Amino acid sequence: MRGSCCLNRRTELRFRVLAISTVKSLTVKIKLLLCCCVALTLLVFCVTSFTFVLWNNQTPPALRSLTDSRKGYSIIMNTWKRYDLLKQSIKHYSSCPRLESVHIVWSEPDPPSDVLLSFLHRVVKSKSKDGRQVKLKFDINKEDSLNNRFKEIKDLETDAVFSIDDDVIFPCSSVEFAFDVWLSAPDTMVGFVPRVHWVDSLKGEGNKFVYGGWWSVWWTGTYSMVLSKAAFFHKKYFTLYTNEMPTSIREYVTKNRNCEDIAMSFLVANATGAPPIWVKGKIFEIGSTGISSLGGHSERRTECVNRFAATFGRMPLVSTSVKAVDSRNSWIW
Image (cartoon, rainbow, N blue to C red; front, side, top):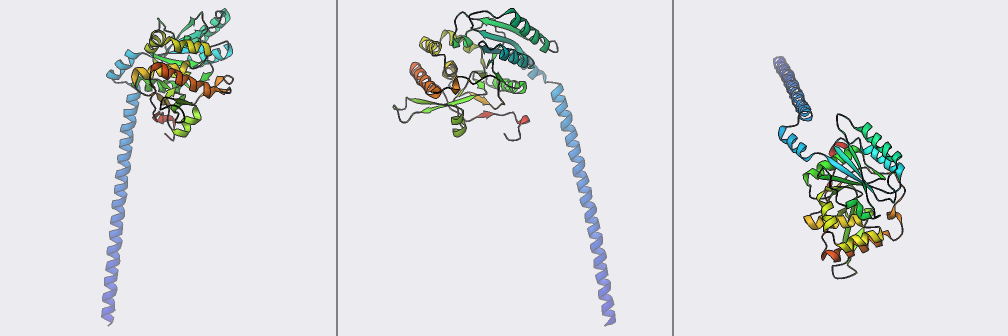
């Protein structure tokens, strides 16, 4: 009996020793595996970091030639007797990296003063860096018309045009990102301010439409226009607007001082058969409220949409729900 107990104790002890040695061996293996994983992770991180630094400092020759061939972009800024806003906007945008030139659309009866000219040229020169010299030009118009912002510019050196109002500020990083988006689709409009239209089911037989503002875009998740108060497009559309836009539409814009942005959206959509691209960006409106805050604004814009559709003989605008977001600066995208 006593011998049996001793045997059991010895067996139990052996099992304990075996279990302990097995656990220790397993622990060592797990630690070794973890060390290998950590080392591999560090190696991958180092290689990735090196590749990232190399990519940021040395653009591949093929991409470099593509970028050089397309140059930068030109800003076309519409203004009207708001000199403080004009100064503030020019001072801001002159520091954007790939900006080549600024064209100010001037439709006032008197030419810009020498004081204003001197100030703006001085600001642009002070913002130019790394051998880059932004050109500043005034496009003087005899007639006061919103069509002036889309008049053909003979000495425009870049294909890309950023149409902007003098009371709207976007960070240069947002403008540069929108320019990159435009480079991927240079025939379409790429902008920050989306609007939408839809068929008016209560009127007509599918040929009457309603214009919707920002809240309609937010509610439906779709849009069919980006306003030219902040949008990129190809300079060729200036030529089309000046020479091929129906005269009745340009006359309507001049008479009613409204809807030139809708007219440009119609023109581009009619030429491409494609929707615009909305770029998400933070907008800072530095001026007072515009005509969009006045009563009856949506009704007047709806009238424009229907009048232009009738003139074109169809509805060229194309709806979409696609939005371009710079994921580098956004947690949710």
